[in-house]
Structures are given as C-alpha cells and as structure tokens.
Length: 193
Image 1 (spheres, rainbow, N blue to C red):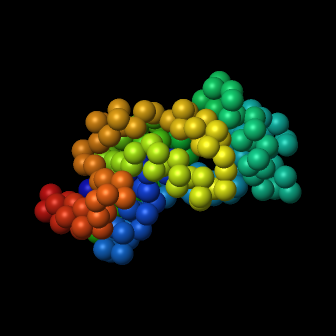
Image 2 (cartoon, rainbow, N blue to C red):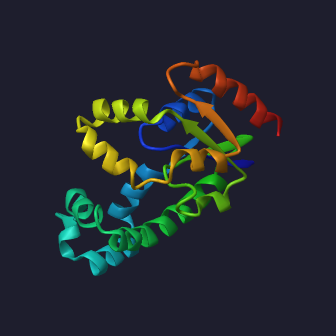
C-alpha cells in the first residue's frame, strides 16, 4: 500500500480535496485533527507540554488552545519546541494508522508535511495549490478573521511556490479549473502505481 501525503498552504482547500478522495473510497488521516486529539489524550505528550509550557496549558484536563496559541504564535523558539513534541507523536500515530489500511493507497492530510519531515515517511506527496488572494478570502470567510491575521499566518508557512515544487503532483484549486476531475484523474494514476 502506498502512503500518500496531501498538503497545501492555509486556505488552499487541501481538506476539501481530501474529502473528494474519501468519496472515492480512499481513507484519509487528518494530521492536524489527530495532533489536537493526541494533545488531549496522550499522557506522555501532555506531561511534556505541561513541563515545557506550564500547568495553564490544560484547563479542566483539556488542552487550553487559546493559551498555547498565544504563547507560541510570535515566539519561534516556543513554536519549534511545541512542534518537536507534537510531530513525533503524530508521525507514530500515522504510521500505526497506515499499517491498518487495506486500500491500494491511503492519504495523510497535513499542512506541515515538509516542515515536519513527514514527507520522508511517505511514498508521494500531492500539493493543493490556490493563489494567495483566493486563499486569503477563503480563510477570512471560514475563520471570520481579518486580512492582517490571515497574512500573519501565511507568513509563518513555507512559501507556496517552494512547497508545490517539492510535491510529486499538484492539484489546482484556484476557482478557475474544475478540481474534482483533477482528483479523479490523479486517483486513477495512483491506483495504477
């Protein structure tokens, strides 16, 4: 079974593309959702987070996401520390999940596939591309946020043109081309590998 990553910058539509693959019968591991889950249920990870960031990182035994986000958002060292704890836990959980799949290929959807080193554990990576203006508008609508906040988040991610060059396949989700036929064609290609 092939392990395929699917990535793209914030607002690119990678989750939407992943849902189309699910409709085609392909299982998808959502790494960002799994990271949030693990930070709430993995005892060893919780201990590491409390040691690194203080007891306030949990409120009533649940991750205090707003506290943690405020702590790491503008602090590269703390963000790197957080990632150094969470990424290995997610990688281990993803490996276990992949071993349980029985389809010709399965997908791991994650924003930070290259940044986390997860691509080294995958056979191929699909990039989902959308122009910056489209991505900004999508995130403003989805998250009910400001353009300044979206731009600040974009600046923390690997440049989209670099990310797409690292991918084996690219799906354009630019609102100019139909996305579903691209996914179906790629699905057929991956089944043939």
